[in-house]
Length: 117
Image (cartoon, rainbow, N blue to C red):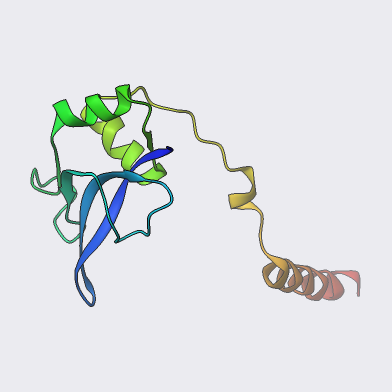
């Protein structure tokens, strides 16, 4: 069974609140889970101590059982000192999309035209 530590959304519309849960990876996002490991409230300030709450002992237990944390939960675990920080590399993040590249080429052509005259 493939285990995940991930977020399960709660809260009302436009007022998100997440539970950090250990679950089978085949279950739906807000579906059945095995254990609630903590909470995450993104509406609080980033430096608020209640923004992320974790049951450290149970998180370590599930990591020991082979559970894989999702990207967002992995960042919480890194901040809590439970896992070592991974190097992240997304070289495509800085590459403009098709529409932006077309606009940039058009602007470059327009600015180069008066300089030639």
